[in-house]
Length: 278
Image (tube, rainbow, N blue to C red; front, side, top):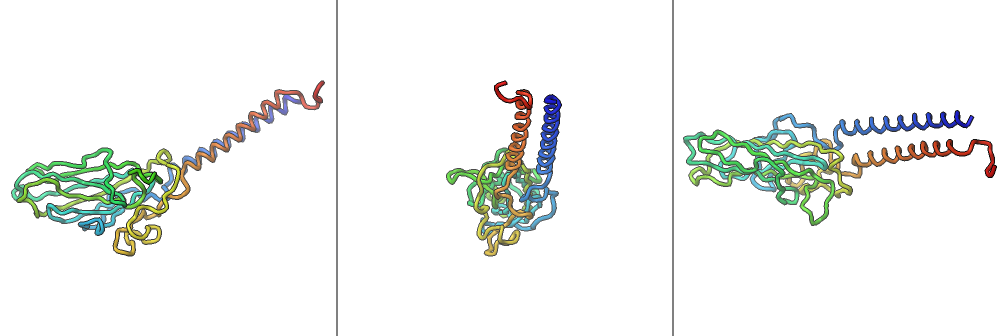
């Protein structure tokens, strides 16, 4: 009788353990495959604004995946502002279509820089941030891959935080005679969700967006003339991260394992019905 009860208990615990593991795995896959709460839709190269700002304050808002264009003059500083949320790694793509060869007097060097909402320059992990265009080149392409945006950071650190990121495109070296020649600029910012591996405990009170918070203003309109852009689905930098799912799932599995182990130790001891000391 004792052996039968023990076998039943083992089978019941094993079934419960397997069911819990399957439920946890399904939930984890759903979170991993589903869209992030604050992530913008995947970029498909859709058309964006057709102008660019000339300072930080006049930066033109653009969303992830949109292709922003601008007609400008060689020597101008061109600015765009794009929202990047926590857990996202952004890549800036820029292309400059140069004037005809006959109008140019030499090579030119172009550069793309990225600044966060506090106007701190963010380093590129890799990419072609600066490139030289030869006199016979028709265009030049640049790129900058940023570090993964963190949900929280120490005040003294220069970690990228969720908020607006400024993209600045300009020429840094060229013949003086070529200043003012017309060029066409294209900028597109894409971002990949790095998932739970990029989560950091803590939260940011508000995204680093100039002016009023993007959570209280429509996308692209901060209410005071500053680019208060925000992701179309809102910011995800709240208390919830996928780390909570893994923590809760681990607790459930640990509890089930404890019940299973207790059942084994109880079943392997003294048979039921025999008083202690006998």
